[in-house]
Length: 328
Image (cartoon, rainbow, N blue to C red; front, side, top):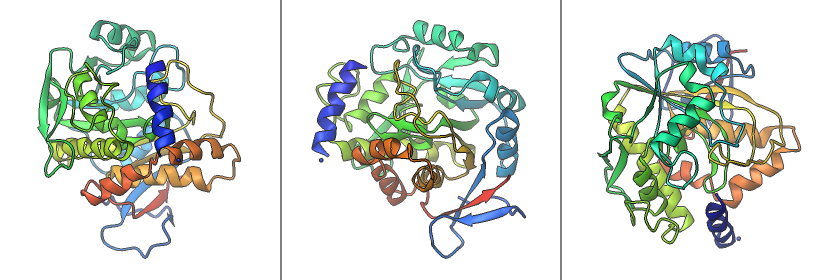
């Protein structure tokens, strides 16, 4: 992670779909007239196992077949990742398998053996099978009309799954500004080599030479969006997105020594549109009355993080026009 911090310092200087009808309270967060392609984001301020299940059911899209639940297992030493006790009921309800891929940096999730041990230490193997999807290699998903990427390199086990749940911990991120649904489905599902391919905007498809070839910031953010679109295109309608906005550190769960959160928790949100979901999370941070939000906002804006959503919307992953349906 020290290597990441050095790359980040340079980067910072350089920068100077629809769901079911409901009778619950609806809030338009965009000051935009409602229209047919406005995405729906469901929300509750309650952060509990029951809340996650409630939001899943509100989406109206059942996870069927062999279900992949993409989370971050968390770098050992960190403590902000989603806890097994929070997600266990949902994982059991969907009979899901927790899926991950190895990291591109040499931490304790770089090798499959170490990654499995970390997942066990953090309690995930106690609630579900855990599949390190690039343990046996990788495959390529096509990227259509990509500016930077020709394909998305993912774990070889990933095509074995019929349905994907992107279950994200929304928080800050040292390189992307924030980590949410788009980051989780792009870098998260990418193999170790695939992560390098994204971070270098298509220049390196192995981890060798990664840190010497980090892409310009906007190219990296756009590559992340292109990889996310490859996953979305692969899944079609067999994918949903749930984000838990708690433990709102400026740092990612890939950090072994993350900063403590400096603002209060927001809640749990879910959508069929990852762009709308990430936009709603960032909007709720900005509109919060918690003064501590300034630190997370600074992290997002100093990394030009909203560009990921602008470009993601441009290439057709989803829409930043949304309405929140409050289930409280």
